[in-house]
Length: 301
Image 1: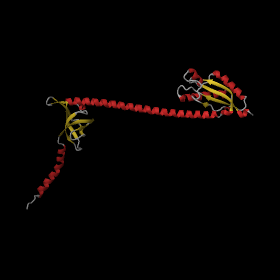
Image 2: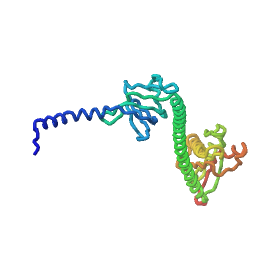
Image 3: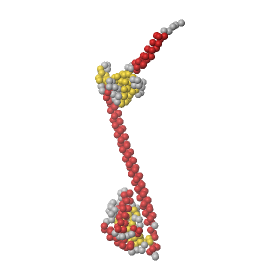
């Protein structure tokens, strides 16, 4: 039967437990060497692609030595800046793992021809990235312009629909005047894009107003028109403004009561009387037609 020396056993166990952390630290501090291709570089961190790890992080420190090996046997070493560590460069790294299992580089070396090749690759990538950014910026610009155009088109379409509704309403309203006699008429013509009545028409409009006052149960119909040349929405507005200016003269200078004037009709490009392919035809279409009407039933009384 064997006898154990208890004090000696306790001593050995104590020494083993005391040395265990130091042995682990020594294992972490063991120098390793890896070879790989730099995939990315972000400040003090490099990502290497090696045969064992596709994304191996390597930490660079102020004490990391960077060098380019030279000569037939690669025996000479030229100190280099960390700026030479660019994506695409094949490197050899010597270092130790820290307690976060990260490889801290003590030295990084590479061949001169590998650096030249990596620079060409990086230059090509930089140009590609720059072109991609430019293309992206242009696409964003075009997208913004298209959105702006779409908004403008939608607004224009809404205006066209509103103009069409106004014309349809005016046509329906004036279409109900079959029960009236036309007792007088004045046509006022306008220059291109003009809405103010030429002074030469004022005497004619005032004379029409004076005649209307002598007629029992009269009303005055005012309809504005525009040529079809140019923007439809603008032409609709021109026809409205022209009719309004004529009505103002009839009320302010001809002293026609507002109750005797039918709501002026903005007819836009409808009912063209002249060909818009000629200047003369366009001039005929830029007009306001003023009529003195009398209800047939009243006239028969």
